[in-house]
Image (cartoon, rainbow, N blue to C red; front, side, top):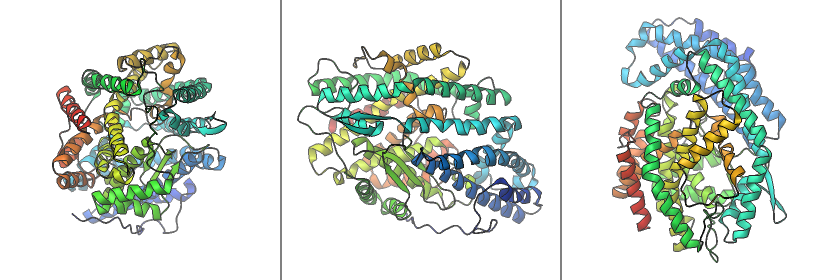
Length: 572
């Protein structure tokens, strides 16, 4: 199968070529046009859908750039104000029109004549949006958009001083890989102590978010925000009980493997007791892994690795590089985390991360690179709505690429021992990430099932859930305060509530694809590509099926996949 990563700028047919989003007064005429335009023939409907898609793409790309620029520089007040202006002055005015256009679509008799398979998921989503729309939620949702971004503003200011030099928390985490145990402990304590300085601010922010989210849910007729959010996220193919079963399976089938990994780490380091600053460390005399020295080198080597898998994959990143779609290095004032942001009109996404030369940065880069490939593959689909794929398949795209790309990590590690260590690090991470996913997800269920909880109750619930998914092999004595606020480092809780179980579901899919890859590389990559190019035009089980996977996560399935990873880990 041949694909091209060459992007032709979309030719606008509805909005003027030079149009940019400035204010609502400039945008509203286009919404009025769509609202008032007669749609009486199949050709009318096709043109109407295309014009609405163009408008959605232009607005989406503008909103994304506002968020990208703000996260790249959280200290720039003009960038923050531009983002806030969109959230408070433009988006709230779009929503009533969007609801009217949704109703116009589903009520038109011609809609029933659309290709049922092609349009099924789109129309299902439209009907879901109609059922959830409440005009009095618009100001609340606008406030929530602005509030959620404050997490990045607060976190972006966090720095520590080690050996006389100032580091962001992301940069400082490299010391946790150092063979000097006293330096590791110093770095760990300084990072955690810096987080504690803002614990009350973050607690207050989270409490405010919870209260407003609960009100949105009640306004829409739901008992709690969890139930509302599951509906809003379009979780048509699994429910909260499936999540609870996932938690149980992780505790039973994955936690024992984490204990085994930690015991090996303890033995490797020659320690009697494993402390939290030891889990990423190397023994004395062993240098931490350094897969790259600069952001341009990381991009270049990732392009080479992707090209060896499929030339198209490398071409995607080359196109992004030529368009300036990377901001990779950590710096003060930059929001934490990493993401790939699809840009609906121009097609090439933007990758944002906080690299500091560590092994984890390589994993983040290939992860976000997998998302980028998904963006390119889905971009040719006719309508903006078709490119809105479920997060569960989006994370399969990224997590599979972490595993596929290992085939060519010799580009990052010329030493065979370092290469073996890097692969071991990745395979261990495939296993150890599951308990944290289960912890964060279960915590969110508790938080929104008990929205009026006190701070003391929140802390107690967090510690109980954290303990449930923690291996007893790490000694936390004397670190109780760090532990009780450790949830505050997870940006998803603040910015994208309930978006976390997707990582667990998708990791299972990624392991399944990697099993295929180990048997037949080309077939696996064909399946991967075939699923991603469908965008959101199929249901989640159908997208998994296109990738040669089953959409299920029973205890038996999870155990089988964990056994496979364990075998690969032993073989490495």
